[in-house]
Image (cartoon, rainbow, N blue to C red; front, side, top):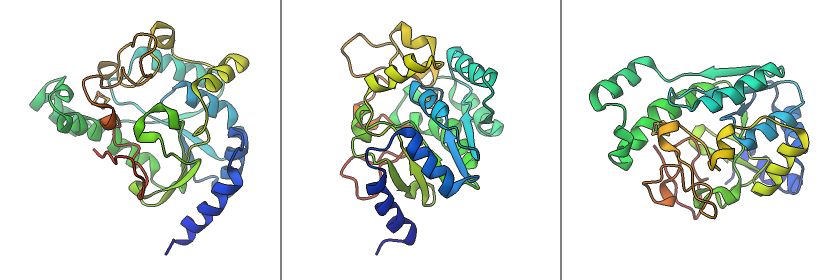
Length: 246
Ligand code: SF4
């Protein structure tokens, strides 16, 4: 039997099919603000959402893994200059020191387990703290980004994070739609996109990809596609897609 929130979400999912990002965010703000957070990694999708989120009561938060490229901070700074307040979360110092002292700065290339261990310390644990006190969070995930996101819904129950509601207003958007909105609204984006990086994460785990390759081919490029998640986003229970966890 579905929980009350799962029942509500199943109903709302039908209601929001085809809604604009503004429509989804407006519904979310009415339903959840002020316990509503937008997770920003300062991707182009996040820029579209920050721009679309005019409703009060939504917190923009970001995780500084300690390994982000400078270009990402420049996008964050541009949003700050435009009046957007970003709440930053950092990994636990002791855990990062232990990781670096025991395994050095590149242990994430040793094995999938070591990569997940690094993501767990630098991303997953701070995300857990960022989500505390929230009833719902918003992401810039899109279905076409990867095999692990192919069954994404606009709104879902995030069982991996205690049953929070997770909103993916751009789930059905294409990259072309995202870029059209970026150009039309002159929104900030990372300079790395103009240097062959379609998808950007931590600096040592991201590289440029030749034109025509899958957009996420440059993320953890030494791994196979079904492993390309960091533990922040886990496929919903019941999904036929793989369910990566850190
Ligand atoms: S993306 Fe790479 S550097 Fe960043 S947290 Fe994960 S493994 Fe560590």
